[in-house]
Length: 191
View 1 (spheres, rainbow, N blue to C red):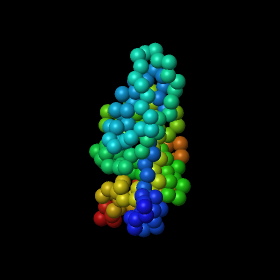
View 2 (cartoon, helix red, strand yellow):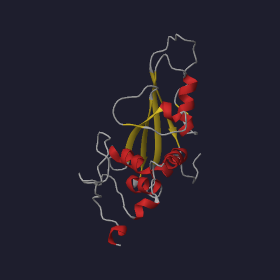
View 3 (tube, rainbow, N blue to C red):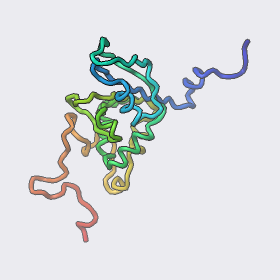
View 4 (cartoon, rainbow, N blue to C red):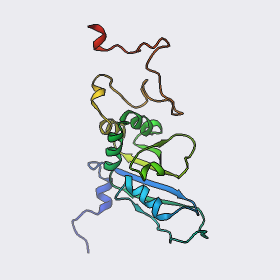
């Protein structure tokens, strides 16, 4: 039977509707406790729905390592955590480091996530595993700027991959010259 209702597919691909997806995945090793892995992910992404839920086994397990993927509909808890930790500029830099048009991906520590903290992983995987986050959204760069905005940006505006962004290996960009003087002029210097 045909109706005049639009299918969900029509709504998602409609130019008037912004595409927004958050894919969250992790590698679970045979020796890891599935409940703790899921708890760490759900600490940051409470609405995360995994594609599979492995059967919990006693150690030692017969399970192979497995990649568990799922989706989340919101970054609200993640954004709340980075605000509380006061790492908005770092978060902005890391989240835009691997951005391609309207898609980005980054990795965070599962061990930190279970303690309601965000710790970005740039190079080597930390003990306790990682969570890979991939975001796709129209106008993603502008949206990330808005989500990580704070009052300090009134004096020092930021944009993705600007001269203030961290280096690709995660090292900080120096804002002071070799004599310890700020490299940017501020209003208080003129007084």
